[in-house]
Length: 561
Image 1 (cartoon, rainbow, N blue to C red):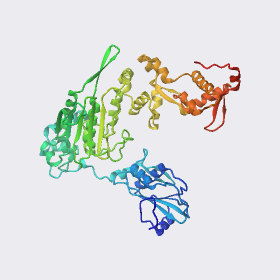
Image 2: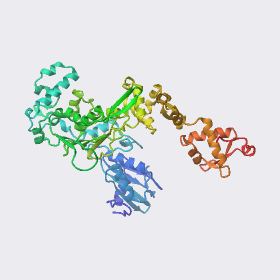
Image 3: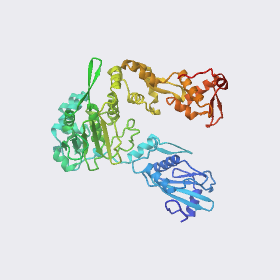
Image 4: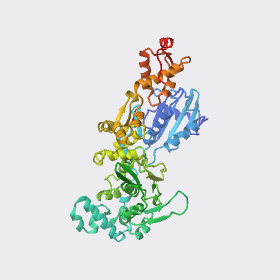
């Protein structure tokens, strides 16, 4: 073993290093010169790609073209810190070693394979090698990885369960809902065994775990699948101690799905707002959003883990916590766009009777309902690899925005897609707009709901003048849109004149007009320069702006007070 000062000790010897140098680069081996430094974010992405492709080795301080030779690398002086950063981002143990070779320092990163059935994601993509570059993993490779996770647990047969373990009333509710959704009257006369076989809840005479979750008696669930339980609690405050009310539902979901909503609705206060001559009554907890949240918990929780689904109601928020992290492939970044039900057989049963979309996700509906009622977006901050914790906040944030959406009208809103609601919410809260949503901006502009201001990289969006006029807030619209160009130029000129001796740097002038981008401020400065009002000394970031000399001499420009 050769020296490893400054990193984890690994069994790296000269023959091993020479073997790497002679080998061809492939999905398991990567070389970078990195003589002086190497970008940490790029290092993370390469480690992600190596992990996604079964693990491998990344070596810094070696030329990447054959014949390779050692050039040495000064990157990552503190390897323990680098290793800690990699582990934090990848959630995998990456071993690091610094090899003190006569020709220079060589750094070796040994990256393990990703977990079975779980690709590693970083900055919104599952990276892989694509020739000399990194590219997002292709859909077929992703599917192959997700399929490694094994069969759908809910589709497996419970060895000792029989049809006698299923509650007839729960099956009756399912039959009625499926018939109503499909319009198939023949379902009414089907024998139970055939009905459940057609729904793939009974397979070759065996009762699946999905059937137990949906229709099981309390005794059967206690015997075969005790963790298939939903616990409801009402708490009037965050003070620890017994809940004011607690109900345990260890029975088929179709026996209690309505009852649990009725319990929540008993304490579902209405928030009142005046809308013209009409009083708006908005429930604190939206029924569609709450039902979707509970359906998601039942169909996506990990039934191989102990623990129950908890539904905790507080006066102004509702928490739904289910065992197991997000299903493979689902993250906070893609939860609205990617669908991967953990228990597909349960999700398909819900889809048959119209409770959810076929994908079994339904998260888009939760987001839409929250935005339509001017409530905070769903909160997943308490989620981790062991649980999914969803919090629905019921407090209405901006009654005026709620009035605006009422004015838009339910018919127009019905034509909106999820991206449209997200955009309206972001524009309303003056938040940055991600690239994923920008394609829908022209639609909302055409609808007259938002306006575009500025140009180039300084472009921004705001709610339309019609909205503020409707709300009687014309002054707010003017403030949001910003001052007119001549007023902005006058403010810049006054600052430059007040600092005529030392000059004004661009950073200061941007502070004068914080609502504008750097490009917009520079455009105004060039306009002032063209008019002879100001001039610039220098060409770098340290350049300074001074009043035009003729203006200083004559004093014929007076900035507005």
